[in-house]
Image: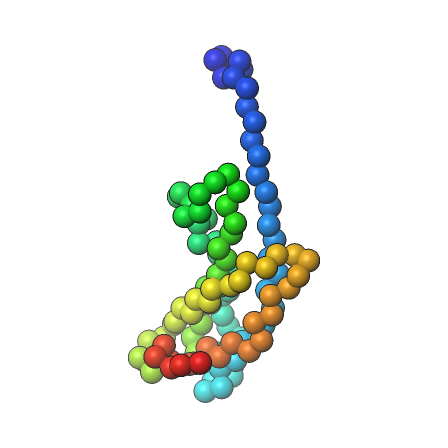
Length: 106
């Protein structure tokens, strides 16, 4: 009953990101087709790391794949930080090589 008498004002924004790219697995090309890709915001749960009423998203891609790796494990997770470029512009990552070793340099 008390809530009916309190003024309420909520302000927010919506940001959309469009990411394109091609996954490659030269050591076993068939493995590049069976992946799970999630577009995630670093601050999605809990308190955001950015202060203020408008929190700019910190997007990254989380790619779970079975491309062969030097450590011999069956599945791997690759995370790629993204530059927060929002629609109508498009983030083009080009080729993403899933079988690169973690200690490789680009």
